[in-house]
Length: 123
Image 1 (cartoon, helix red, strand yellow):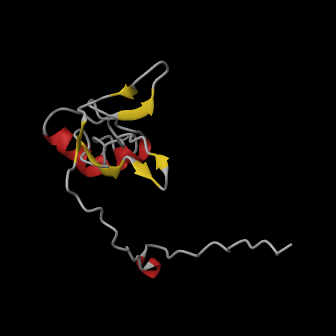
Image 2 (cartoon, one colour):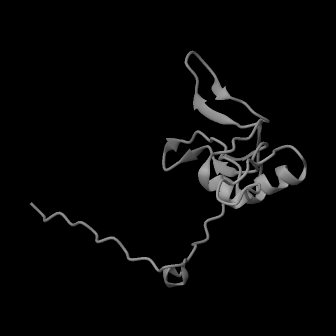
Image 3 (cartoon, rainbow, N blue to C red):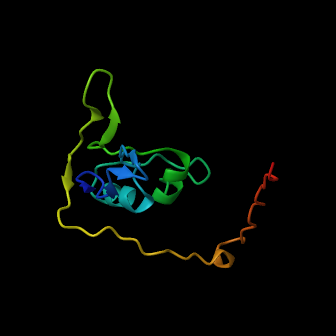
């Protein structure tokens, strides 16, 4: 079933490749942290190198900022899930998105060298 997390906005299938999927909200992104700072909900520490408050981009590279309403669907000991957070909403009559995504690796900063593929000889 296609589901949307009410805390982080993530959309996911509750079953993927025949396996149950347990959603866990990710930490705040730099953009989300910047919005929280602008709203006065978070105060960033001073950057030791500059003596000025860290930028949200630098802050998320140094530490994790968890959502106060985080959802964690991993099974809890006993019954239920670890944390309901703001809940989740089933998306009814939804067609899962199955469009391929193509990434031009040569455009990434510094380039990317593909890892060699290990092969196993046939026995």
